[in-house]
Image (tube, rainbow, N blue to C red; front, top):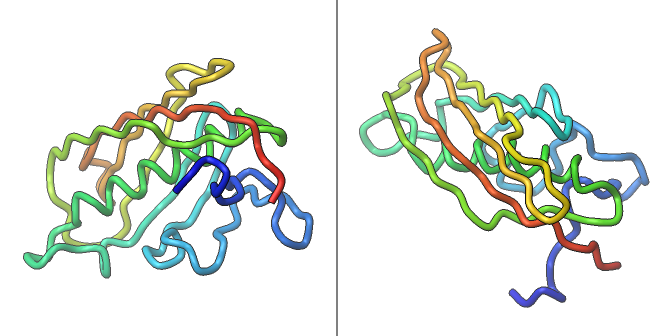
Length: 149
């Protein structure tokens, strides 16, 4: 996809003009995976995702699902940092998977590491229902000028 074809940023207003905040847009991967946002700010974002429906063939939470949760939370926080005239686009994501989750809901917490003028970086911890670390991730987003649709 060319830069000129980028979709609107998550921090831009919804079709009705209201800021998205913790709203999950319909028809997105977030909706499909059951991600719910509890808190979003430039410094921190918190959200949950059910294990059911997001497992690999052996019944364990799919590592890619943890990555989706991590990138979603970091991207929402980075878009809050970017402000209304810019958007954040992920440029690097790394994940380390520590243990499996087989049931319940996992919680992700993205915490700002660097909030710069052009780049924002977040550490994201995904925990199981007992509070044990399932995944550690780091997301870096580039902040670019928003283009009118």
